[in-house]
Image (cartoon, rainbow, N blue to C red; front, side):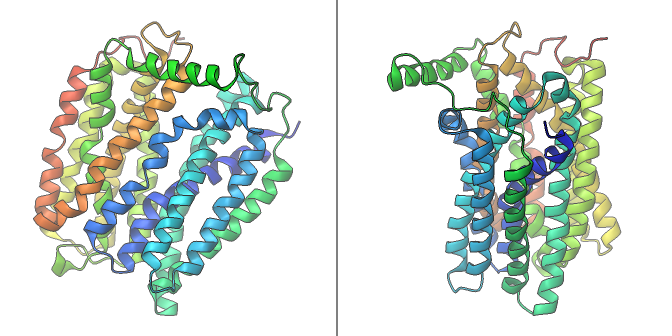
Length: 427
């Protein structure tokens, strides 16, 4: 059997990079191309939709072909999408065409997530799965740093050299396309072929029985005792952050006369994509440790405060418009650290919901996928109006609004019932 170190790092690096391209690089790209904030926030927020609805076609990945085959095929599809974006950038209708291609890549990426996570559980014994969880998340975060950091820096440098944002980003997407073709070719060879990785048998009774079983899993999720409280938590925990995240790159890039900080693209890659993501990762690791030691119930309120209080950093940045990259990077790092620290509570709470009141929910995998769908919906809907709202208010008042918008999150947290023992590590 091929050693997990041969394929796990590349598999999860490849899982993280297209998500970064769809959610972050698209925003920076369109800002560089001169698209207004209202349009950017509206249309790039729609790109969350595949992650919202991916539980609907998850069973098809089980029924049609092996997960290994899905992974390799989808990596080639993502590579082709990236190449097509690169070719479309110099065109006069680049925004419309590239947006359609980002949609294709988003659906491929969301499906790749399903296949990769399922394959991971089939290709490794249970003890090895636990041992490599840290490797998975580290490689995913490295993809975020490479994408939001390295590739944004490359876009800025290439733009300066070639004299055109379209040409600069063409270099970036062509590089990513070549990397994904190589990644697909590597995984076609390197991924093991576990005997358990085979199409799931059709349930007795055919497609009708399968559809009924599928719907029963969804119905069981919505029959939970506290479903209204749970949905409020899933949709509102990141209500403020969903609006903030869509406007951070435009704020950093916009001219100072427009209320922004006037950074160059490569400086955004350093401040937000490298220093910021590193702080986000450290915050997430620390948050996980705190919950493991003290449990979710005791730590939830400190974590939610730590997540939302640093939003005031952007109020200060918009009010003072500092010029030093080091100071701006430190401020972004503070906000991202708090976000990573507090977001851990959200992830653990989703595990609690999926496990059910007694921890023995037979549909916990499907219910966790549904939780992630609502998580994506909670990011998509507020992000859609964030650009329009910023255009009406200006950056300073918009960031003040973001701080006020944390109130629904605090209310939702107050309503959620938490198992006192959940999340706490036992000896």
